[in-house]
Image (cartoon, rainbow, N blue to C red; front, top):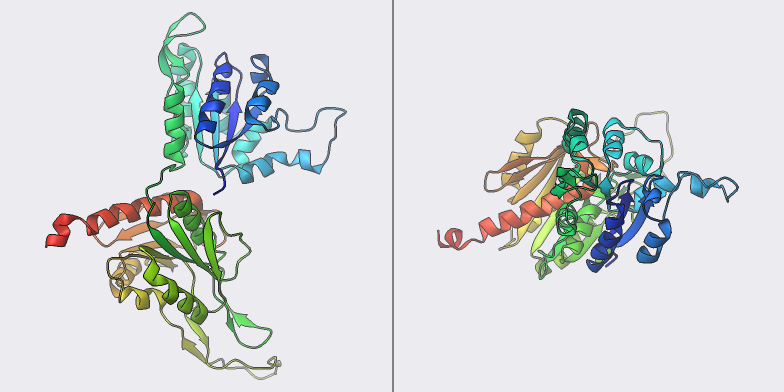
Length: 411
């Protein structure tokens, strides 16, 4: 299992020295730490301290220092860091950095990284009590909260400026707890086997052409990665995709709907939870041409036949397994999802409108509603597919507890 990667932003305040202790505390939870320091932070503590603690280069500038090795890698390093981080933590966060985050100002490495990253964000403010209470700061805080940023409110007490009140950096325990909560750093799927399908299928017309869809596999792979990190044994049956298998996941590569059906049927008896996120082709050609079909001036007719409904066929004999299906819709999302929930004998349907901005195929974000067998509908706002995956698993565990409760078993 690969380490979760946290980028720790350290900004210019007296509490900057406490970030060094925070690095050690996060490392105790096996997080890999990349430190980014603002110019102000370097007035209070040196980058060498964080480099020694983290074992990694400390990033201090958006571009290479004058006279240094300026190159393409240094110019786009904020993008590389954004892509590989699992969470951005800023502690301490000054009033200045909160304002820049809220208003979209990107004038140094940390602020540019914030805009470039789709990872969850946790900030722990620390400042003078009057600065904390100022209407501008509070407005910025509310703007960030509305965007999904986790705020670890400062403690009250004696401040470095000599005043008493709110503004002192929250305790390490509070900050680490917020990180763990945001990353869903828990092992609540240990002992369970989760079977997941992902990606498209391809149905060949001839040696050159095939029918497929726009699925990238990102959503299914995000669920697989999240389940593995939460302790599950994960079997991922994947259609063709450019994605790498998440660490700790057993991937089975398939191409066609029939191949996916056979792989799922073979592994289904081993699973406790099955999540069918793949965009399986509904039809395949009645016959595949052994030679390339030549273009003609006359209209061509393509004869298709339905593929096996993998979700429905597995759910017929699901026993006490929990079954989750996906519904990619372009209209009537709720109505179609509820119909599918019943018709397929599923326990939950994850549905979305693939035409909505920021949702659907090949995006890094998604907007879904979870329709559960016990009647609960849970609409989720736009968020990263990694976060959607965590919310799906949260709901799976809630529903599993409901369906397996002693009271329900006795009825």
